[in-house]
Length: 411
Image (tube, rainbow, N blue to C red; front, side):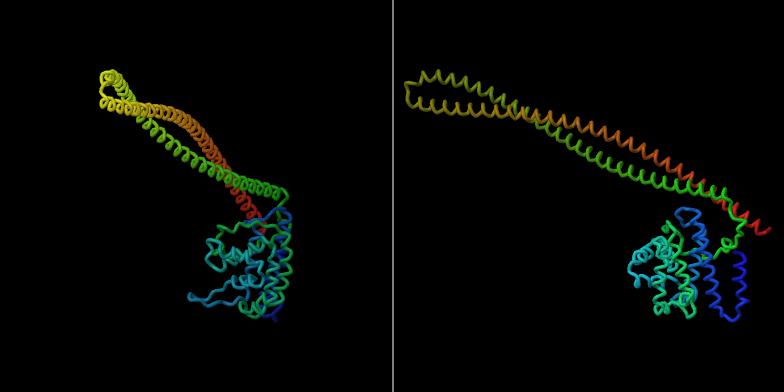
C-alpha cells in the first residue's frame, strides 16, 4: 500500500505528457479505490452496522466529495463565486423520481444552511439506501446536463467517473445507520487522512485489540439502545401521569359539582322543612276551622227555623269543607316530596363518598407513577454516565493506537 502511494506521487514525474486535469483524475480514482477497499474490508471484519463516527466511512465521504468537486464550475452570486456539489446532486431528483425522498429530507433538515451541507446529507441518505451507485450512474448517463455544472475534463465528464460508479456498486454490502440530525455538516473540513491507507500490514491492530474494540462498541451500542428504551419508558410514564392528572382534575371537578349539588339539596331540604312547618300551621288552622264548623253546626239548630240564614250557613259549610280537602291534599304532596328529597340526598352522599374514594386511589396511583418516573430518570442518567465513560475509554484507546502508529512510522 505504501509503495502504491509512492507510485501515485511519482506519476507527476513519470507521466509528463499528461495535463494536470488527467493527473488529478487518476489520483482521485486511485484514492477512491483505496477508500472503498479499506471501507469494505474493515466493515466486513467489524461485522456490524456502521455509524457516522467510523473513520473509514468518514474518509470515504471526503474522497467522494473531492471527486464530485473536481472540475466543478463556480456560480456567481451577490457575495462572490461559490462552488457547490448540491447543484448536480439536486439534478438527480428530476432524473430519478424515487430519489425525491432523500432530496426533500436534505432540504428540510434543520440546521443546514449551505448547499454543501445539504449535499453531504444527501450522500449520507443515499448510502443508507444503498443507492449511491445508481444515482451516480443516472447523472453520468446525462452528461449533457452535467456540462452545465462541470468544466471539460472534469472527473464526472470523463471515463474515470464511470469507473468510480462501478466501484461504488460494492458499497451495497455495507449496512450503515447514520445519524444526520444534529451533525454540523456545513462547516466540516473535507481533508483526506492518508494515514488510513499508508499503514504497514505488520503494524495493524492485533486480534486482542480488535476484540477489545468490538466489546467496547457492543457495550456502547447496548447502552445507547437501553438509553433510548428508558427514554421511551419515561415518555410513556409522563404521558400516563398527564392522563392521570387530567382524570384527577376531572374527578375534582365532578366532586366539586357533587358538593355544590348536595349543598343545594340541603338548601331545598331546609326550604321544604319551612314549608312543612307552614303546612302544620295551616293544619292547626284547619282544626280551628273544624271547631268553628262544629260551632256552626250547633248554630244550625238555632237558625234552622230561619230559611235565609240556613242557606248562608250551608254555603259557608260547603266552602270550608272544600278548603279542608285542598289543604289535606297539599300536605300529602309535601310529605311525598320530602321523602323523594331525602332519598335523593342519600344517593348524592353515596356518590360523593365513592368519588372521594376514587380520588384517593388516583392520587395514590399518581404518586406511584411519579416514583417510577424518577427511578427511570436516575437509571437513564446512570446509563448515560456509563456511555460517557465508554466513549472516554474508546478515545484513550484510539489515542494509544495513534501513538503506536506514529512510533512505528518513526522507527
